[in-house]
Image 1 (cartoon, rainbow, N blue to C red):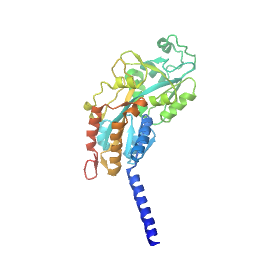
Image 2: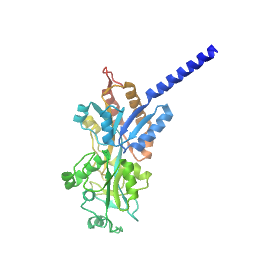
Image 3: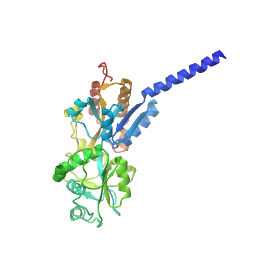
Image 4: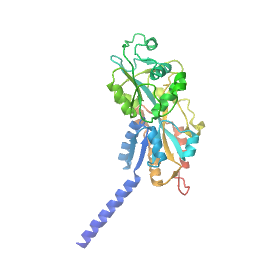
Length: 345
């Protein structure tokens, strides 16, 4: 009896140790909705491969920056890179994970994916509330032969602090002087017109519900929800469709080694086939870690994702980081240390 009881107690103790070890290995992140589809896919595959779980809250880049600054998560995620000055002041490091694109999508009767063409200047005028009808002469001029309805344009934008909005507004500021002057660039903006949806999910949902609407979402959401994307005129004057190839073309000239703090923006990039509203998405981590084991778990996860997650990223039309950029990223991890100053990687 005594032995049986002892075995039981030891069994419970072992189980408690196992669950404590499993718990210690799990880690948390929060932020950008732009990369959520690939982070969810990676997390699922990684849990199956290692038993280690990631809890990621898809709350928008603004929320991700707030949470990493408040130390309530092991990593933050943002599509707006932080400047080297802000990183230094906040005690953070950042590194890119994948490249994707912000995509204008419409809900117009009879308009198929890729049928409508727009320029950045026009897109800015629509989001400024200056162009209000779908059959406006300026839109019609770019779309000969397309049956444009005499219908009001319903603008949809993000309501939360959003890195996708940063990419969007950064692009519009480069191609529409009035947008630059009146609205500018940011994760949270004073929108001149339209309704706000929370997250890429919220914008996608609004666009699908509102006839005559235009919104912007990351490409994985376009594919998942079978949305009608818009072709965009790029810097070289060519109309391009969103795809991993056009995002890759936008990233082709990116020199990450020359970017302090990996601060690099890919909007309005040169290249005949470049998608003009492309951007990388970033991970933010604290330089000094209160929970070194959690930080190690985060770095192990992303090391695995760079080595084994490329095909998964491509299946969702994200562009994986090139090998030479991954080497740069991994060497930057030596700046992440425990409280005694020992590197965690």
